[in-house]
Each structure stands twice: as C-alpha cells, then as structure tokens.
Image 1 (cartoon, rainbow, N blue to C red):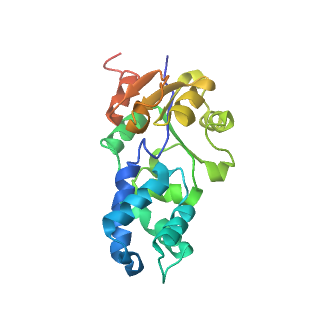
Image 2: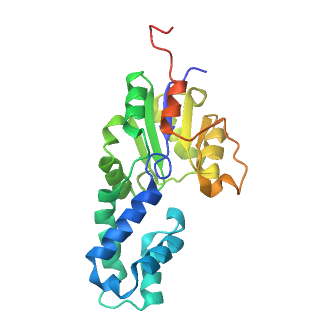
Image 3: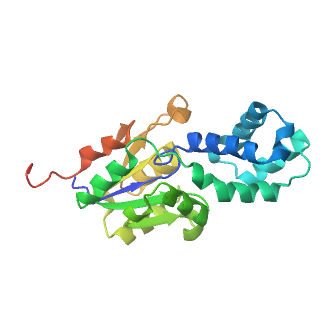
Length: 226
C-alpha cells in the first residue's frame, strides 16, 4: 500500500483531552468565586463524571452542576461562554505531536483532520496546539453538517484531499466513530489506544499505536532509502 494521505481525529488522538479538561476545570474554579461554595475536588470529580469524556456538551454539564450544588450568582450560559473562551488556553498535546505531523508532511503525504464538534471551538483548539497550518484539509462536523461515523464525512475528506480510500490511513481513538467507520469506506484504520475502550470492546483496527511517532513507520522511504 502506498500511503498518500493520513487523516486524524482530534480529541483523544492529537489532543490529550482528559489532561486539558482537568487543567481547565481547576483554573475555572480558581477564577470564578461562585463555584467555590463547593469543595474543589468534589466539583471537579462531578464535572468529569457528567462530561462523560466529552460526549455530553457543557451546557448540560453546567446546568446539572448548578442544580445539584445549588450554585447562586452564576448561570450556565456564563460558565459555558467561559469554557469556550478559556479551554483552548489549556490544550495539552499528546507527546511527539508536532514532530510527527511535520515529518509526515515533509515526506509528501497529505494531512487531513476529521473531528466531531463545534467548528470555531475545535479550530481554536487546533490553533492552540499550533498545528492548524499543517493540515491540507480540516473537516469539523458542525461546519460539514455531517458527523462521524457517517461515511459521507470520510468520503468528503478523501475527495477534498484528492486521494482514494485504499491510499489513505485514518488514525483515531474511538472504536466505532474512527476505526470501524473509516474501514467501512475502504481506508486502513489505526487505533490510538484509549484505555476507556481497551477492556470494553474488541477494536478491529488494521494496526494499533500508543505514541503518535509510531505513525512514521507508514511513510514512504526517502530517496536515500529507496
């Protein structure tokens, strides 16, 4: 297989979302006195439980927190806007992110990104990671009006990149939205191991990685190596 393009998921694949969110929550607690009527560790743990690793949007999380802890002098809309504004400042990349993407691009392989989420918010996170300029195509579900695992969003990305499915790899952490969905359209799927799913489901990927730098093994050989 000659790899012409490598496409990535964002949260849990390039962005260490768990570490980023933990940093943000602590910072928000320190900045907003209305939250401090609840012990920090209690609020943080409840936030993380309600968030369900990003699969529940924050308007619902904040509303539930306000109701459960009877928070006064603050409302969900204010907390949500604070989240949108401040979360990108706490984005934590997975190790070897920029060196890996830079080497892939230098090898002449096209880079794509497909992420579920809100367009401006996810793009701000890409900018915070300093990687937005490295991608040839960026597809975010709100902007595309399509969400993974819909095959149409993968097909659209391939068309924009000008490559066929059998010449592309998709890298993601979600067994259904990333791995199974990309394989369904004919791409090779690389699972970036995520302990959330490791014991729960069988992940039928073409390969598994623990570190982004492992993606370099799929690059075409340099002229000196050929």
